[in-house]
Length: 434
Ligand code: AMP
Image (cartoon, rainbow, N blue to C red; front, top):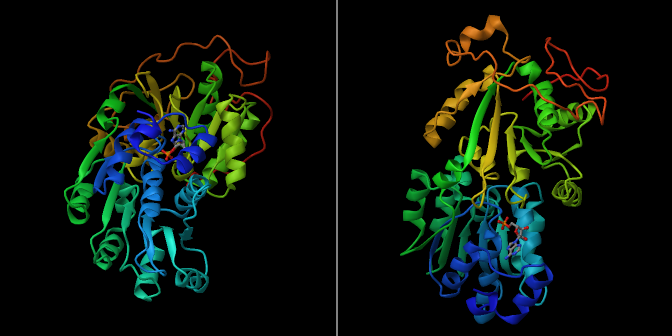
């Protein structure tokens, strides 16, 4: 269907057409009409599917169709787990509002409460909020939600994992009059189902790309490696396999920064995006990555949520996420739309237990092996109970070429000795890992 057939008015269509949206994504196709029809919606959709526009475009239209009930009212709240995500949604919304005159504002931590109170006094159409700060304003009675018309809970699974359940309940309890609720979640967990029963009334269900289907299309593999050799193994893998567009995940901003420096020292075209980078910096890096001018993008989980690249051939977990469900989000970036994808995890002993939690979550036992030249320290091997008995003799073909050391000078062999490194001479970088 076209945006016109779905029922969006011209000023909104004009704004999105300028952004290059020619046709609705599946989630938009199925959600926009329901929101316009004032239904409660429960949608499972991941970032990158166009879900922000799926709820925001019809919301903007609904605001125009009805007059505010009070000049000082907050009419719509979009609640989202992090400041970073809230800022992204606000930016998108401003673009969608180009030819409309609704107002949008942020209500997130790290900003002065007083300034926010002043802003709230004047009434706001669309408020993008994080749960903690919204709760503070509710407790201080500086926000009046009596006239709220639409409540959006974005990334519900993540919000629950982050422990915001009491905040969400408190906020929900504030909403007295009949309002419309839209709940979006990447995964359909028991916790999310329980929340949906509390906040939704006769919801319409929208499901895009089932989680299991996504996982089936992905080739998952674990390489066991000692923590202090991970960066070297990563460079070796990328170089010897000649990966052109690989997304690498770390747990923290600090380890992302350290890792990218190591990769660059190994001659790889790598860069990093995380919450400390400005939006302009992140966009610039992403554009380069999309054009394959950058071959390796190192990202933290939060930052990666803004990456809208379909069908990445490889995703590598350099460190496992603290929240097991994030593993599913990460690897869901590969193997999309019927293409096979590859998800590799470099597993050191510290993440062993977390890997088991993840495997229980996805109901898959992922095969483990080692790469010649990077085998785990024999003295620690006993703690890797899962490989003791079946350590393969040779699990990785000898590469025929390598970009690691630059164009033609690359080595064609896997490093055999511990600490044998290729590429330029490195500075000693202290790796904290966490
Ligand atoms: P989201 O899933 O909301 O994070 O959106 C992912 C990206 O897709 C964002 O950069 C949007 O601007 C973009 N996008 C959303 N809808 C469309 C569409 N219909 N056509 C093209 N791009 C879109």
